[in-house]
Length: 194
Image (cartoon, rainbow, N blue to C red; front, side, top):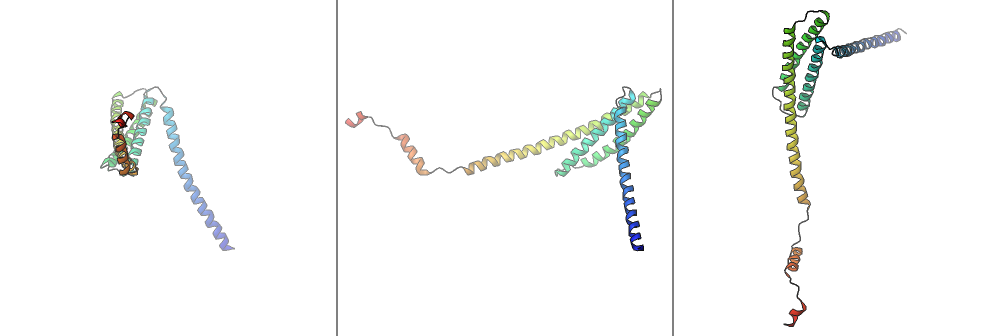
């Protein structure tokens, strides 16, 4: 009886442990979703706080798209050199800028005094990071089109060779008969009299 009780307590303890672990993960995801929804709602504000929130959303989107493009290129086995590390550095700077933009948006919502010089510097940094992301993606797209074009050219050449190899070689006797028919001049009944 004591062994059964210990097994029951052990099972219950394990279940509680896993429920707490799953609950923490769900809480983290719910917090992220809540922050994202709050950021999107704040981005609808027509003022400077809304502009700052829109810059945050744009920055996150650009970095995310660039990470996806680099990951796809890595999975395809392309030689990317230092590009993955560069994208990781861009992500770190984007996270710092996101925090600065969030702080600026919070201050501009709560205070009537706005630091326009800081907003200008934030805009410049935002433009630099998003432009870098866009340039990386454009370069990767160009590489992808080059790889694709090379593959298509190879397929076209192989197709031409395969079609040519499948053609039946002409029979030399048929060619001789065809030449004879072309050169043979039909005789008219008048030629037989001579």
